[in-house]
Length: 176
Image (cartoon, rainbow, N blue to C red; front, side):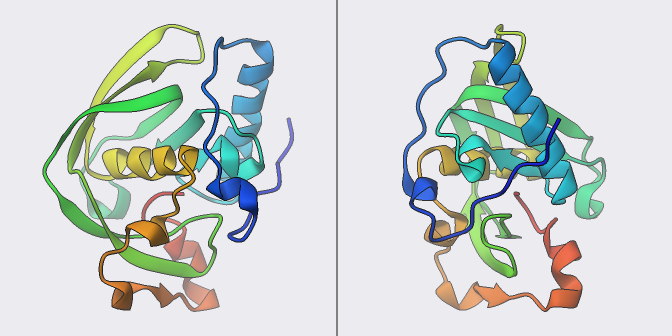
């Protein structure tokens, strides 16, 4: 396995729409494994294939149990061709991004979602989730459509630079 380079804001590939995956095969599973390793090394709680320069619709979400004292269960899943089919509620939280290190901003997202896609076993999956897992999935799907979290910030005054000594904590602010 390999830790891959994460693209940074300004790279035009982050603004492109990712292509739908036709079939989950061994090469896509290897890419997924490398993405997981890269996400964990960063460290992050989500990663989309465009962030490593691969314009395919593949995301990883890995939210630890009780993340930010949320009392939510662990959520760890790779989703191919993810699509939100239901969304309920609206909540604000600060998000950060591995592609925009050192910055955070308050982003509104649906509180509960249902997402469908394919698993790495090439079988359809449908997941209902809430809280941080729902937020991270939405953040990662945005990456597949060329949208960065800063585009979603409604009150631009909430965008702040995080001091270097707090960056490890910020990597878990939300999203990747």
